[in-house]
Image 1 (tube, protein in one colour):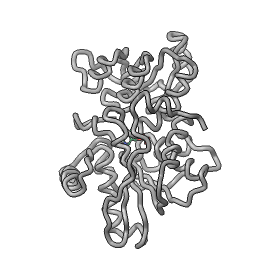
Image 2 (cartoon, helix red, strand yellow):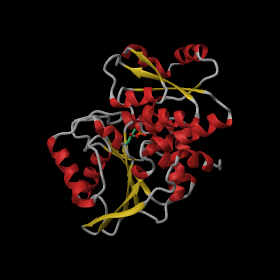
Image 3 (cartoon, rainbow, N blue to C red):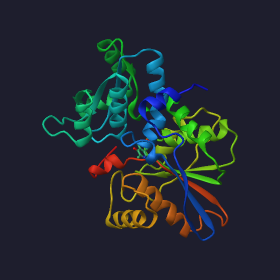
Length: 303
Ligand SMILES: *Cc1c(COP(=O)(O)O)cnc(C)c1O
């Protein structure tokens, strides 16, 4: 295994992140892995997915990284901060034109000396095509390109490292699903480490079949795609109806664990609903992964 400890120290990452009891209901014990406490700026699962990329960049003495995201992207935000701290220049390819109306995340990126390139939706769609990437590479010959969300095999490695930190054993581990790399990384980690835990994904957006396909594409063929529950997207990506907002404030009040409605709040909402529906057999120990994202709560929408 690669030793990421100097990177962890340089960025001030809390490692391992805390693992805490959360609640107990109907014979089901729920615990939480607090990746929201990994770092005040770097959003939890974005660190997990980026650490392999950053380590490689340092090893190769890379001075420029390129990546992609929307105007509210937690991924670009986390990467921008890391690059700033590590003396790497980030070229951020942003979907949409935010000239003169930067979001708080894009303002931070500017502060951290990232170079923002606004592209129209049509061009953004090309972000994974070979021809587009070759072109980009020609423009920035010494740069390394990281896919949107950092989502590739290196990201899965970093997610797998999370499992090595766990102090206890669980019957289930639950995480939110958007691009699917978090879920895929846990699914692969479970197999690599020969753990018995069942991994369960909660869809954050309307994406039945589509999300399973995304996760399947990220995973080596021999590893099965975990179950994804599609009943709690609450209307779609970044949609937060009143009942969800109310849940989030009650949840934070009762547990003292901060959540936001785009990811963590939705996932905990799903977990409590699944307990009521007796999805988990009595006696189960369930670990929910708090993926962070609280910086994104500065504005309702985030990605
Ligand atoms: C990006 C993000 C997710 C989604 O993770 P994927 O790997 O894209 O499925 C979940 N939670 C938070 C806080 C995020 O920022």
